Amino acid sequence: MSVRRVLLVPAALALGAALTLTACQSGGGTDAAQQSAKPTQAAAAGTTAGTTGGTAADAAPGVAPAAGAPNAPDAPAAPAANGTPARPKSPAAPGGGGDAGDTYAYSHPCESKKLTVRVTTRAGAPSQRVIEVRNQGTTACGLSYYPLLSLGDSHSADRGKDVKPLVPSGLGGAPAYPVAPGQTAYAVLDLNPGGAATGTAPGVDELNVLADGDHMPTAETLAFPLGSGAKVLKPKLGLYRDSVADAAASTGAADRQS
Image (cartoon, rainbow, N blue to C red; front, side):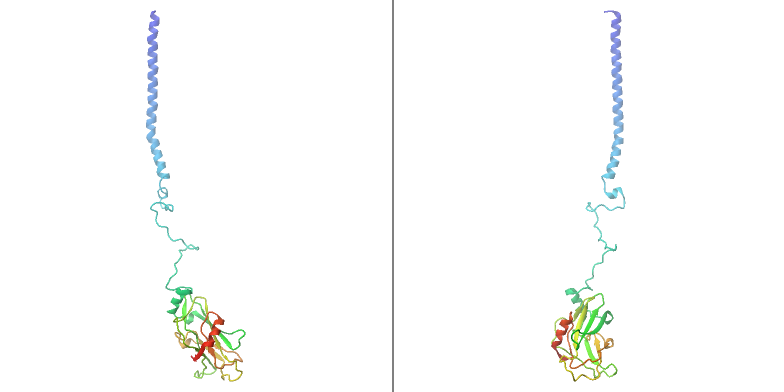
């Protein structure tokens, strides 16, 4: 072996060692950079998780959690169509008929200012007058079993001679006749039940009506003209009913002086 070849071998070995060392240093630098980058990436990942993984309240303070979320507060009552909270009906003042309205009406007499009263001639029965009492109030109220009526001379100040109709006797049951808001109670007065052509009470041309004779003062009595040609003889008054036909039928039970 020559001296030149011997010198080349150590040089090659030295060059290989240098290359190996460089490669190791280069790999170690890459690992260190990757290690130093990991905490930054983890922190970024943690921030993202905290925003998307939390509740809606975490993401936007003041926004209520979605329905069904754990520990969510009870939802408020749904508003009415006009945007205001729906108001519950008061059981103390029912607005309709039925048992609840009737019970309320039994202890709450109707007020004359909340009623409208009309008197008309019944179609097909010229001797009969229909008294219509309509409840214009917002709650049910109670009337006496029949209105308090009298027939007299509109030109006379003396009411002692007024004619009073016969009314049904033997009444019992509910303490009042209930009338729901917006509904009408009907009573029928037959001026001349027997259809007599003669014997009409002289000077009678007016019908006086008090819708509730049990609770209203006589000063609230209303006067209605009978009209020309009306014949009055032993008149009969029926009970308040919810139809004219039923009210007219109840006049057959009128057997005592009111």
